[in-house]
Length: 426
Image 1 (cartoon, helix red, strand yellow):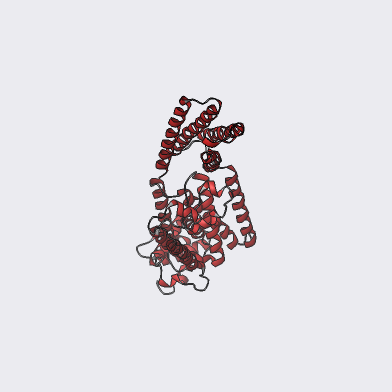
Image 2 (image 1 turned 45 degrees about the vertical axis):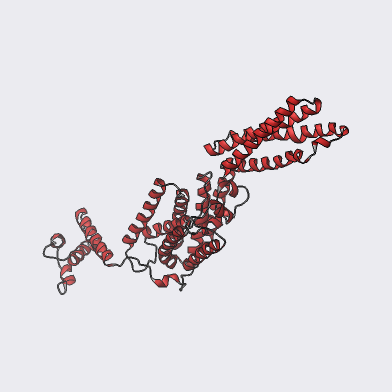
């Protein structure tokens, strides 16, 4: 810039300043801005000059952005530091739980559904029937080592930025609230899916970052904000699109965590602007999550819970009704015939009829083909058991070879159906 340019500018007329502001060949951007600022101080900026000033400022901002480095993960980010505690601790916790599950026999690459449910996986019919802790525990379980490593890398990336910006207390609060909200979103949208993984909570952290980047109310390290916003947007959009295109990905948890994080992020912006107190914000967010969770838990369909309860009740009834196979029917005294006949009715025919009604009732629910097939098999099995009891009662009233033959046939039929059910459940 020319020496004493600012002093020279003050002596120029408005017309001369306008010429300088428009001359991008002879005058630098910095000199043109000085001329525009002088015109602004004189209230002489036209709309054309206002637009020109904005273009120069945007160009300077973009140039400064390109000079800023992108965010990179350092080895030191794996260890706690000042105002940076929970990111490494959460990573350690997730890895420790995974190793513990492996030590207890879990497959490293492809854990079974039963294993994840036993360790606290989130599935609707168990969670809404009193096992609410699954909303929390499922956030720390993973579908194999690749799932764990991907999530821990994403957590390290976002955590090494965000925790240092908003502070460790706000960070862990956002992680846990977003994680639980993601679990609630999962049971709201998925009827019979086991949800597990930290990705819902991690999407929540990316959601928190969005408002901070957009609003300027942040203490981001000396890195490119635009580059970070672009990377964050691409990560979120790509993973959600993959979730819609592939099965086995709990997109409901991802989206639920993301939107919860955005709400939390805007709340933190309001705190930074002094428009709301921190404690009040925490209370409002926790109460809102509680209301949302309660509404979901009390209103979602529980047809798989009904299915599970019905099969358990069926099993208990079956055990009660099989007492007859422990009786030596050939050595029953005549005086006992009436009591055994009554018992066969109440603890045989009636119980199998109860099982048939129980199964017919849940069959009205909209289950998949495999569930319906099992229900049909159990109904046929129950009908055969009921017929067996009725034939035995008839045999008490009249002893005949015909009834014995029918009993033999029905028992063979029952054995075949039992084997079919066993084969089906393998």
